[in-house]
Structures are given as C-alpha cells and as structure tokens.
Image 1: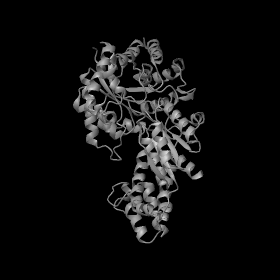
Image 2: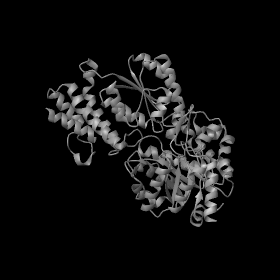
Image 3: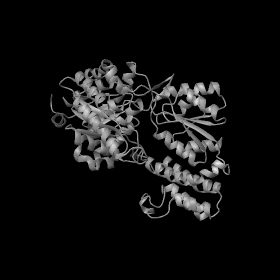
Image 4: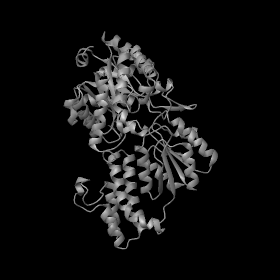
Length: 295
Length: 220
C-alpha cells in the first residue's frame, strides 16, 4: 500500500468518491433503516457501492460509517456495536479498494450539541474514539471528520482520533451562505476560522463538503485557499435538489462540472470528490479531467 | 415597569439566562431573564405582559437576526435557554388559566429522519412566540401525527425533514393528514425544502427560517 501522505505530496490532485447514501438506497436501503447496520447485514451490497467508486477511478474511497458514532447508533439500539460496525465499514471499503486505492474512514457529526448540554465533551470524545479505533482496525488508511458545523465538536473528533489512532486526519466542514459573498456553518464558523483552528497541528488536510451547490462551494474553496497553504479537500453537492414527480432530483449532471472542476484546479485543491447527489459518473469525469490536466 | 420588560427582552435577545451564567461575556454578573422575570411578577407586572412584552419581543429580535445571518444557531439556543428560564416563572399562570397560549403547535421530524436541530430551533421560537408546543421528536410516523391532531383539536402542524430521501415521507404524511383532517394547517421546514416542494405536496406554508413560522402562526 502506498503512503497517503507521500501520495498527497507527489500527486497534484487526488480524486475521492461521491455520495453513498443514495447509492445504498439503489441497493435497497430504506429511509429509517440505520445505514451502518448494513455493514453487518448486507456487506456485499455496501461493497457494491465501494467498488463502483473504485471502478470510477477514485484514488480515495470512503466508508459506510458517517453516522457510526455511538451517539447516533443509540437511536437504533446499536450503540454497543459502534466499534464493530465501524471496523466492518472499513473492511468492506478495504476489500473493494485493494492495495492501490486509499480508504478514508468517514466520521460524521453526532447530531447533538454541546452548547445545549444534551451531550458532554467526554461523551463525544469517547464516541469519536470508538469510531476511530473501529475504522483503523478495519483497515482505513486515513480518517475524515466531515460535514462538521461546530468547531468545538470537530476539535473533539480530531483530538479523539489523534489520541486513539495513528492515521492521518482530514477535517471538513459544511458552510452555507451568510450574506453576500460570506460563508458560515450553521454554528457561525467561517472558512477563515476553520483555517485558524487550534487543532490544525493534528490534521493534514482541511476541507469542505456538502452545503449547497458548486457555485457556493467555489466561494468557500476560494476563501479557504486564501487563508491557508495546507492541502484542501472539496466535495460539493450536485446542485440544490428540486422536487420532481415524487422524488428529489439534483440538477447537475456529471458533464456540467467541467468548468467548476477546472476552477478547483486553479485554486490548487488537493483532493476533489463529490457529496450529495453525485454518483460514479461524476467521479469518472473528475478522474478524466485530472488525468488530462496533469498527465 | 416597562424598563424591566425591556431588560427581560434584552436578556432573551442576547441569551442571558441568569446571574451566574457567564454568557454573554459583556453581561457577566448582571441579572438574567430568570431573576428579572421573577422580579417583574413580584413587582405586580401581569404575567401576560412578561410574556408578550419581554419573552416574545426578545425571541422575535433574535429570530430576525438569525434570518439575516447576524447570529447563528448557538446564539438562538442561548436565547431559547434564557426564555425557558423566564418561562418557568410563568408556568403556574398557564396552568391556572390566568394566561392563555395563542394555540397549540404539534411539531416533529418525519419518519426515517433523525435530525432534530432545526426542528428544535423552530420549536423554541414558536414557544417563545407564545404558543404551546407539543414536540413529538424525530422519526415520527404519520399515525403518530394524526393521533396528536385528534388529541389537540385546532392545532397547527409543523413537519421537518433534512434529507432529500425523507422528504418523500413528508409528502406521504402531508397527504394522509390532509385526507383525514383537511382543515388542519401544515407548515414544513428543513434545509433542502423549497416553496415549490411545499406547493407540490399540498402543505400550507414553508419558511426557510424559524421566524417565518412564527410570523405565519401570527397571521393565521
């Protein structure tokens, strides 16, 4: 297996994967079912999603563990299986990734807020620790704290995974527009504040995922790049979804992304993938544009 | 007298819960919504005035600032906490019927969806607007919503969804509610929702921000 940090240095752009939830639904996952239990009940179906992104040409694939913290799993009575479900998530992606593609263990927010005291710092720390331990055990090469909105929670996730694993860490937050040309997470954190976070010494990549569409993401990426020389990851949604005949459809198609991706190249973004509404078709295109631009 | 109400509104707007609370830093050591509400009632200010001239005013101000991106979720949560601290002093008057709520709002996140931050924010803003809120929690089935409508006749419903995949469940819930209780008004909210979506599923109101829900309730 190549070294992730070396690859980050050597290669101009690494391609990561796209959305998982909607692809799992294509495999039969119903809304209301805990996606992570599928790592145990239907590993082959989860593996199909992982394999699709490997086949699309991703250098990095994630894991089916976004909601894999004990705090989230507790809703389904699965909290005690947190380490196991995360380990299985990483094993499934590892198997699909083989020895050339990196596995980036996904760690999402707990959905609980420190400020309202519905969860304590130590509960959060323990939950993120379990998740990191499980993902490392299952064979992850690195971890991403993603879709974060609270800098304090992100910091706890980073600290927990730093203390309990030996893996490189990525921290990615979700920003919204907050007035003309301004961006902030729902907790009021700006890209500049992320770029100055206290936990920077423990992460190797900063980034942004989810949010609205590519236009907004370019604004976020521009601000992050202005504030930091650290490697950056960007994973946008395929536009803002619109309701059409009984289902939500994301407006962008893979071919719509070329101009956007070129702009990310101009901003020296180091890892590029997709978030909600994207699929292997987006990743195939990004792979091709990266190869055409940097071969 | 009105100075006291203004102070309460100020505490709620800026999230000053009580004297011990360190937040916000520039009000450290000063009395909070808790102490001031008690003082107001002891001074003979009518409870409904404490509610309408203090709590409602403060929550309305923070709701507008939230809509304008001048404050974010943490500030609104602190405001809601200070409102709750003051509201605790008003509880006996609600119980005795000395003051009346404007009506009942039933709120919940639709089936399959566990996200509650947005729903909780709206719930707090509505309560701060003087309404009784019955919060059914997350992953709420259509049956549970319908049961609650029957339990609280004349209520208004608030449905939340964060995921594009659970918005479909929202449509189903709205359809069944409207089939059984065509006169019940249904408000919807959540990050991926739009006015178009509201129209297509037959809901009555959509707001991209919690203050919009409060204003809608005032209007109907």
